[in-house]
Image (cartoon, rainbow, N blue to C red; front, side, top):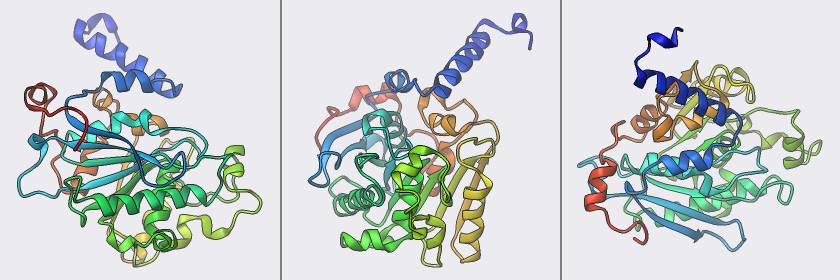
Length: 316
């Protein structure tokens, strides 16, 4: 590409794209990205307990009244972040909460127990408990209790899959996957035994990992409708072994499945492209998610209009 032929604005975009892509690849851009997303497109309720343990806390991003679409679903999405079950915290994913809330979704982002302090199945149990909390509180948060979805990226996609497919975990807290309107996974690992990554081995007590720890083992006709999003160039979670096989198994069981593949994103940029400043990276990733939960792909409230009519970014 001859940069001298590009208009100044286009050149700046190319340079910025390269810089942000490099930052994402280095897993160091979260503060930068979160600093760039609007703070006036949602109402925030933070550090809410869904259980008694230190990491059983969650943040809520609620849409403004101006973002609610008339006669449309009022969905609630519980988002589980990735990090090989050994790193991450809910504050890092403000950009996901903002992207969803700006489009009319109530987003719940929980922390959960991490390895090596906690091992399988603790992070699944925490995810189920957070889901139970969301089901119980959806109406209070302005969402439809019949439009609750679990969603996750990478190892968080595993958490979402286990909550949606293996009914043991929700049953333990007095709920059922039948209460979910669907589940969404971005680059989720669903069939990874024997594990290779040392962090995965630690999180799953390898070689004592039970075979039924794998989401693929729990595919049945009872599974909620499904949206699987992945990149064919994923170097961390094998696309064919996980996403493509999961889609095939679910379809064979008669479960409605949508599969969206991207060829220009990496494992990291797949979730990064959800952020408003980075949606041009190679997606669009958000439109299929919005379509799946029954809402328009475009934001229904802008940062400027939100500033004029937003309530304070805290409380109900």
